[in-house]
Length: 331
Ligand SMILES: NC(=O)c1ccc[n+]([C@@H]2O[C@H](COP(=O)([O-])OP(=O)(O)OC[C@H]3O[C@@H](n4cnc5c(N)ncnc54)[C@H](OP(=O)(O)O)[C@@H]3O)[C@@H](O)[C@H]2O)c1
Image (cartoon, rainbow, N blue to C red; front, top):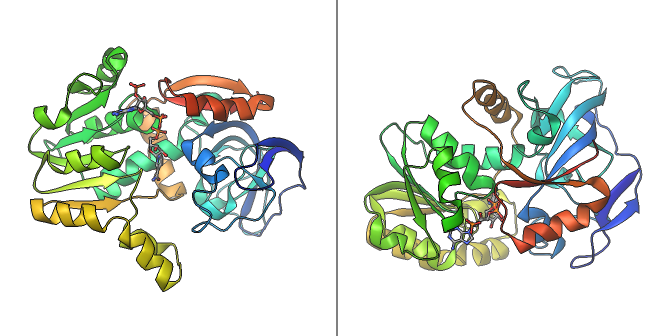
């Protein structure tokens, strides 16, 4: 089958003829219509995760997908050929920039009936990330104050909508030209990160979703109330993530060491810092599906590329300036 793969880290993403995906008893073979494009694809391509995620080459990139079930393994109970599904496949089974992919049924959910496949394919990775930050880890409650960085981006545009649904008061950072857009998603306070310093304007926040790391994360710690929490999705990684990845003790120590400084500074301020690397979950995705069909969440697709322009789609993400998500489509 036709796929876009790399043959070595830092090598180009190229059209490649690949064998048909292998199917296990719990797997579902999905014909790809739409594959969302994420920074994670570029990070994997460039080898940033090579010590943590051990992939074999050639490696098909792509971390989310929507379309139809072609075949279901013998033990699959929830899906049948013809069902329309979407997923963020688990980390060690990526490869949605392809004609077909085999996915564990636990990672799949039916697509929202209110969405076309292009919109559905843009959603799994960013919606699960927002869900895991705000609900699984953040436990956001009505009336809490939540700061979501990069509100106009793929994760931010969904996180704002979900945080509002949870009853939070939401502040966000965005470029000035995106101010109306993020307000339309529900943000109560919008800060133009190019002209204003959010640290000078915001205080007493319960939770910050940090998308940038570095100085942005350091400043985010200082807008939290005592006991508040910053959850970083751009790093640095923490000890819990190092444990979860099953690395050897030395690597675990090295990985956890990367966030030692920020965790120490957080402790001094009476707040906390956690790193989140989102995980696949069909159960959570089913709840996302329900929220989309209730009109609570709307995916934001910034640009659609044809499948044979997958490398250009990845490149466009590097250039930035997009509202919401970039996707490739075989439709
Ligand atoms: N750990 C995980 O599981 C996980 C999951 C998903 C994503 N991520 C990471 O999260 C980050 C965001 O992902 P994404 O998909 O949302 O990216 P994206 O769609 O490319 O979003 C980029 C956005 O960042 C905004 N931005 C740039 N500089 C900024 C600044 N200094 N302050 C505030 N906003 C700024 C831009 O806003 P304007 O256009 O308004 O200028 C743009 O809308 C990436 O680093 C990605 O790798 C991690």
